[in-house]
Length: 316
Image (tube, rainbow, N blue to C red):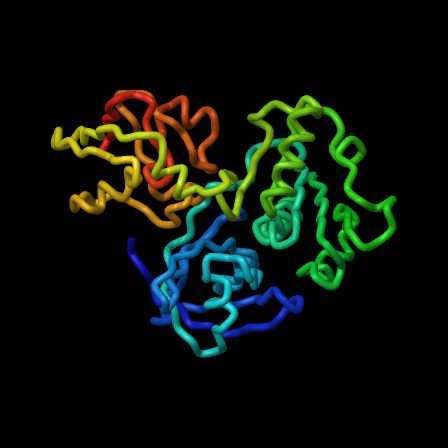
């Protein structure tokens, strides 16, 4: 992966536990442009690589991140909250696995810090004159970032756990049955996303209309899932080299151990950077980033998925 130096040029607390961090190019050259829903990888001083959605106005020339300080996280949030103005870090170019799709209407559901990519979508849709509605759910108003920025938008509705029961999210009321040429977007904690997506499916929304981005793999332990269920062999189409993937390792582990230049980033099956194509064999998909169509087309996340067949041939 190619890293670019960035410098922290502004930082403030949007809530007691959400830091908003503005980055500018560290070398004076402009950042690459991005579209709503994009994220970047951040390489912290501790060596951790974490993914954060870009939530600021693209025309500002800066990248804005909003980071929740989660005590039970893997360490990235604490490192990000320790940053101050003037600190430097390395970031990747933006990637977008969660873009706005072509649709007549867009229905957006944000849970907590899941507002970050959806905030960028709201800005883009407002600029383009798009038809949208945002449902923003959080434990309390005091712990919801960007409320002042969204409060004057009549197409935004807030749902806070500690306020009147009548304003709580009701999927039958707030989503309803499938609507023609309408796309649904969901981002937030795993339990929130499972609730929204499950209710949407129960209401009859087709899977292709539901678009999601998770901050963690919905499997209870992505790394354990990637390492379990017996061994198998991978074959590289370019060299015909074969490597055995034992029960205690992922496909990506084995590729990197053998010097294969395999793309990767999060190693949790949520960013899509490690995805390659399976040319032969049956995949056991355990990622949380590929769509059903992408899996059917042979796409495969080497960091978290395994094999149902004795051998997988990869387009590497």
